[in-house]
Image (cartoon, rainbow, N blue to C red):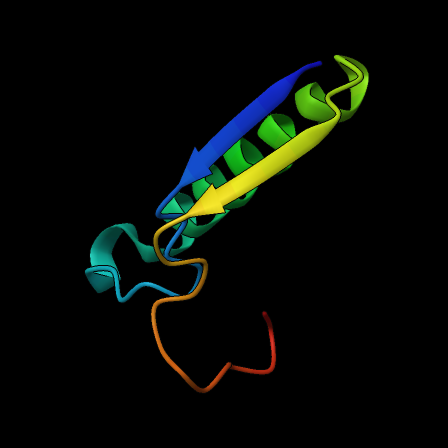
Length: 62
């Protein structure tokens, strides 16, 4: 049986304006790659520990 653990994605985190767009893309790419790797590895159970989103309300682009 295979398990995967991801933690504290904090999607929607506030980022300093000077690096915001670059960091949003980097976070999105990293999260997508992690999920793709989990799928490719044939994981039976994936756990997301901690916070998936930074805030209770979501922004439209999320």
